[in-house]
Image (tube, rainbow, N blue to C red):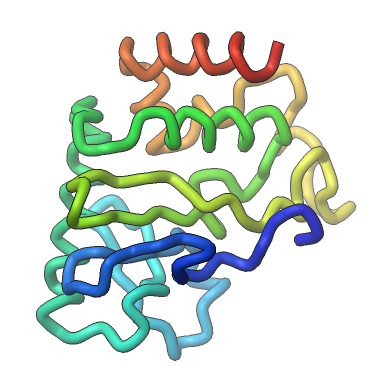
Length: 178
């Protein structure tokens, strides 16, 4: 947590307009929740905690839930037109390069802005269990260094198999990491 700022919506961090359909959510597992959160569960079993808006109305929650389900459905169908491709590619690259064992299941933030009608992956957060910094009781083969782990995760595997995504992944990797 020393390399990133706390994730929050504000003019100087992540700016989102105040309306019923702009939102910030965090993908988590039930073990990370204490029951006081506003959560959405997709048909695929992904759990999202709503961080913004803070006091979400029932009608806004329904709209947010619908948007998140539409995101999951499009990713599963291979249609990535509703996502910011570069932010999803960069998230996957960071998760992969740092062997983030929480990738695509815990502490993964996404935001949607009604103004752009686009989903973004980020801001980045919670990389304390990366680079094989896992408890000794965890199996080493959970995250072997010679396997593209992110490409085997539910959403990432669908993105990774998309030709446009894969092409952009190679371009960004070459431009920013080599």
